[in-house]
Length: 183
Image 1 (cartoon, helix red, strand yellow):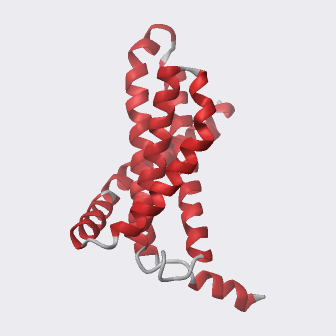
Image 2: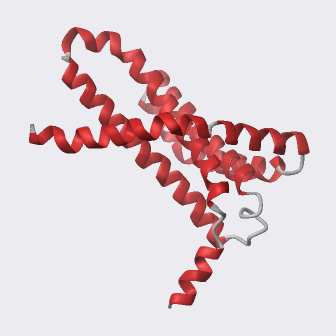
């Protein structure tokens, strides 16, 4: 049993490859939330007090962490099930591209859903299948071109800097959520 667990762990990419992919995923989720939060903030100032706005922000930050970890977990599960040459060997490039395409597709779908209305929701299954196929195609092609491979790796590495702000902010948000009911 112990050796099976160790064999599964060996199928995971090293932490220095996982961190840039998490940075790409987290930057997309947190960035999207910040845009929406700042878009709604002026209206909220008319009918919400500061404590309610801080509470909304704290829940949004915590939700972003959970969403980011879920997408990363999905990629790591794929990495454990697929042969190591498919995803583990080029995890930064392919993982970043799959995360970027799937999250970007979700953002675009929700934007269209809000703009068009609920009748657009009937397209969700086809939209997701298309997004998955595009993500697979882009992930495969992303390692074929040196400039694209180097650019994706460089951008993913640079986005780690945002984690230095986002993770402490999320920890403070979680603490606020846990402590606030006690006050």
